[in-house]
Image 1 (cartoon, rainbow over the protein chains, first blue to last red):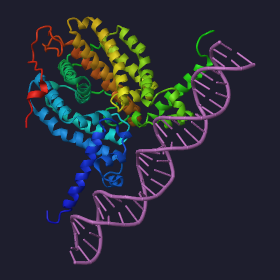
Image 2: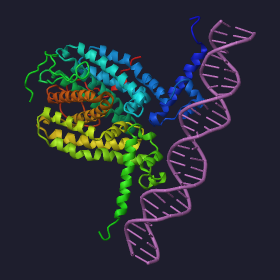
Image 3: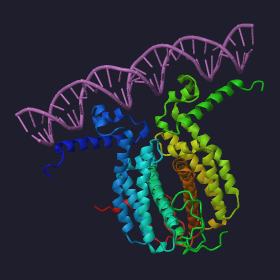
Image 4: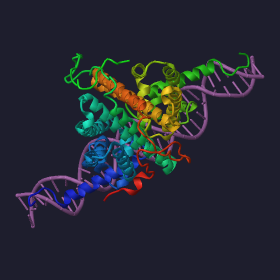
Length: 243
Length: 243
DNA sequence: GAAGTCAGTGAACAACTGTCCTCTCAAATC
DNA sequence: GATTTGAGAGGACAGTTGTTCACTGACTTC
């Protein structure tokens, strides 16, 4: 602590850095990152344009920082949900409720992620994709630990996890649009629909093994290869009933 | 022909209008609409900036035209798929194959829609949402006609249709990213995954009736059918909210 | 308390933007 | 063949953009 770097100096720097992030996030509610101007942001904060460079090389770098801010803090919440041992239906309701609450409390962050997920700035797209993959992996690990996943291939657990995560992200985006364009009523409809969709997926999961869903895994671990066959998850009913 | 309006005149106008659309679409592969410049587009086409106004009021209007171009022509294709009477699994494979082919043949259009679906231009977002809703309605109508949907509520058929459509749109976007960043191999993985996810949804659909999935429809006054299963709970985000 | 670090300033730069206005001149109408 | 129309050209306008450079002055370090 004594010889530790910086003091009130770095605290102030952090403060204006945060101000830049906040200002950008605010401006991004009505435009996308690739059209955001550096001067535009500094003007809101109240600093000279050139001061921007003390914090970020360019707006893309700011965008990546924004991604971490928006998604990074969410992992604990996700883990908390996954740790619960409710029945499937209650778990779904709880999950959707958390999404709903998050959208209500951090609308700008949600909008930013939804918009820039496929937006025009490559670095930001990658940052979001990476963060979402972490979620997928966490969900996949949790799913795999459940008895319901007995006999499942890893690839199938993963595809299920992606289905869940993507649906939740999509729901968050829809919820945002619904709330501001159709009011609370429209938002309620989105929530209702999301719960049912998740429930349907959950039912599909429960009966997955009964149907003979075979099929080779493409490019299994390691690159090209093209071999199939896959002796992996033989526990699942891989019956012939393919038609 | 005699009194008919325009001749080679309007033909030429249509031609440069199309050139504007093509140029914009090309430029939009690496940026988003809200950062696209009017002069930028006219420069590619090779006309004066002011000539732009002869065709569109602004870039938003051009964007809406681009939406129609990208999605409008797709309805016949969708209807063709829906008309087929294959078994579920073959139908899924066929559908995904069509998506795959469409992405390969019209990558720029797909990218545009994926990007601007939640992009920064309201008019374009609405245009895309409207077009996608038409797809949802077509799919819902087709699903409803199937014997498998006997006893289903309209709201549930619709929710299922949205699930299908959204998954396909998402897949198209992922497929595009995968192809250009991970090569054909990564694209193959996306396709494989999409097929399984659709199959899982399809399984969920088949067993939907077995589980007691009740719940009142929000907004609708008279809730139909017996509601059991989970306690409905209309106001999700309201009560529970810990510290 | 002297020396150094570094967040933020402010002027200046060339390049670019959207829009207005007047003009041209080939096609369409009469 | 004279007249009207309208797509497109070209100049000019006031703003805005990102980036450079030398600078100030409060804080940190020795």
